[in-house]
Image (cartoon, rainbow, N blue to C red; front, side):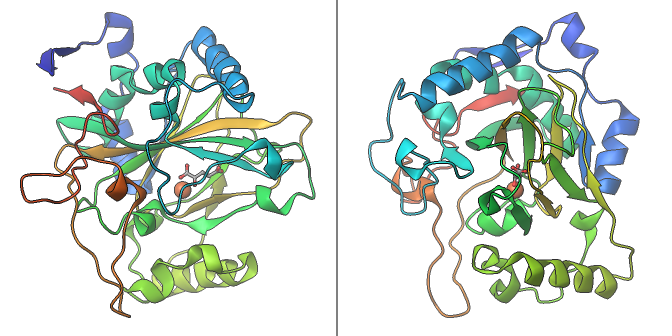
Length: 304
Ligand SMILES: O=C(O)CCC(=O)C(=O)O
Ligand SMILES: [Fe+2]
């Protein structure tokens, strides 16, 4: 047990039994992903679904004071595309309380071998059941590419569906072991422009990358039972396919940082500065830099 800002980080006996084993941690280190035990009760996943519907209907507990430049923020006027809403842990208290559960942070800490975990970002995601909807396809990428201004190489993401999540619904797909790949071009030519590339180009790049590393390309759609979550390393390639099922695929992508992570300046090869959405929101450090430990946006959820 330990405390920060009067917060107590304790796990119950039942929760302790849900932590990854040494073997699980080894699996994560080897494969770059880990499917957890049942970390959320059926009541909690039901609450996530209810609170998300209320959110889509307009409920907010608070709003961001300014709109960051690259905010993903679905509004009803956008219609039947895939929905993404960043900073859901900030804007919705019921959802935020579940995402801040110490158990999730404790699992992340063990996987990544660190003593403390903070939320970095969270995105509420809704994939409508529309087989032809092109926005439902999540192109191959790894999350580190979006976090160039982070110093840490150990950040990770928990993908948290609210229901059994199957290949039919377009579940998250892992490129097994790809966190250990060397990049074909270790600069922003490949890394910073995923969003501007089309999927077939990314498929070719992924295959070339596997060949460059002398490994077989293994794409694993992860079937995630309700209440479980899939963790992936910030350098593990992933994406996801169409929702050909009958129901929407509802989930949250919870991005986590180890306690050591901090802002670092990052300049692209064309001389332009990279920024992250936090940089216009969070408080400053003593050095005048964005503070990725600002408890308002990046709360600590585990400390051992
Ligand atoms: O929605 C998906 O299938 C992928 C989400 C994602 O990219 C992530 O969790 O980092
Ligand atoms: Fe991602």
